Image 1: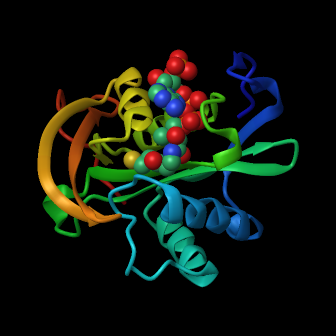
Image 2: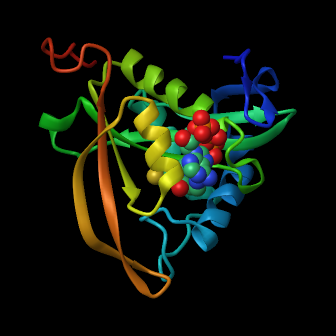
Image 3: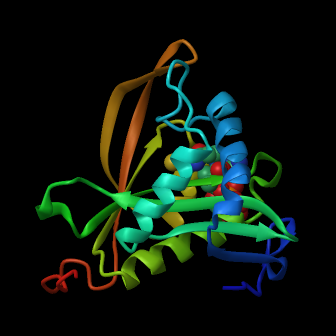
Length: 191
Ligand SMILES: CC(C)(COP(=O)(O)OP(=O)(O)OC[C@H]1O[C@@H](n2cnc3c(N)ncnc32)[C@H](O)[C@@H]1OP(=O)(O)O)[C@@H](O)C(=O)NCCC(=O)NCCS
């Protein structure tokens, strides 16, 4: 998928959103590690061991098995962001629901990369037959809250004081959006 519009400071025609490859793992890890150290993602705090390249490779393979997207945004050959979805819960009743994560390289924040990755992720999950997508966002993460709102996510939950990092308790906001036909029809049968 190549996007033609102009976005922020980056010409979107130079950005390609595509499925990740094993060769992208190092770049994705570097993006993630930066945000672990400096970011506001609720899953990120001191004391949790960061994933290594093998973890990410394993996760990618597992995603492919579930027909779940694991995407990167590439700008002039450089990986500038990635996004992926995982099953929301293991129990079969929830098999049409995914939860997702999105990370943009710190040098390219607010340049429109998130605006390219998120809709591609939504479309890809919908095309695989999933019906709802859920995200958990740190209550102070204005960028992520606004990005998700602008792609149709609604705030469906507020979980106060569930994180502890950088010396303080943090809230999470749960956001949700329907995919494809959502709840208007029964689900398609997954293989
Ligand atoms: C959240 C994140 C993915 C957004 O990606 P991005 O490429 O920076 O966002 P975009 O440039 O595409 O901007 C999309 C919208 O998000 C909002 N936004 C982005 N950066 C923002 C900022 N610094 N402050 C306020 N709003 C911001 C705006 O509504 C923006 O739309 P606009 O350009 O019309 O104002 C990115 O900031 C990021 O990777 N953050 C660190 C990791 C993280 O928090 N991931 C999400 C975990 S839930």
